Length: 348
Image (cartoon, rainbow, N blue to C red; front, side):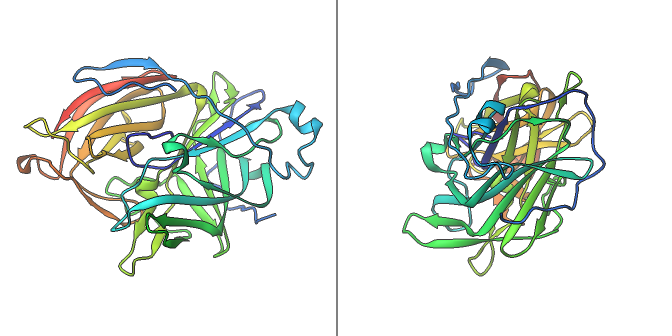
């Protein structure tokens, strides 16, 4: 999810994944693989849409399905993995870098794992580089077939947070832990593995019009995923959301108090008609928020002034009116595919 004005890491996986016939798998697999735009500003009111433009660049992987990065792989298709994010709120740390070491990317169908791209050494990416704009980190082979989950294999030794003073904090990934989120964010994400390599698995609706999606937007939500514990260490409860790019939508807006001043660190949640969490984000210093990696559809927005993230971090909104309370219901917003929908101003 590309976020220039809000918190939450973006992992955008744009894969040339084609095939015939749709289908959904049976639950999140336990199999793991070891190491081996144009945007507009929120409107003052109302709901509007604008075009959504993504312009990725590419970089070769070291190995692709064991076949290297030769001509055959390039002719078969490309896999662009994009990571990007704005500065997250993380305890008392003034974050300069969030580095993830990528070992591999897999797709899964009915529990069967297919590796799309691997690296002979971890491909370390600072998701805050480029001013929060996503940067491509690899290409791989064409994948033909159905898939119901996506996996990211991460090397923990090369994954860390660096503050503005140059201090480095290793990321300690929690394995098989339940979400602590106020709204249960990340319940579709499962993390397996060891202290050296973890596999983050996320399910989603990747079938569009009867065929597997030709691209995926997968959001590694840093606001939900990362926390600073009482000892000052960084812990991660990976919280991912993924949608087929052909059906992906985006909602922007702004949270202001009664005096028209911005509310910072209010958490905005997009709920489906069934009450399921589509994604979450928090407002920046200007009160802006940006919800990515959601399917096209109608969402109820709910704003929380007091919120517990999936990793257990406590967030309290700054600038909210005391009379509002812990949360309030915002507007219902219909977000079409391939568009940035403006939710307008939410009064907190």
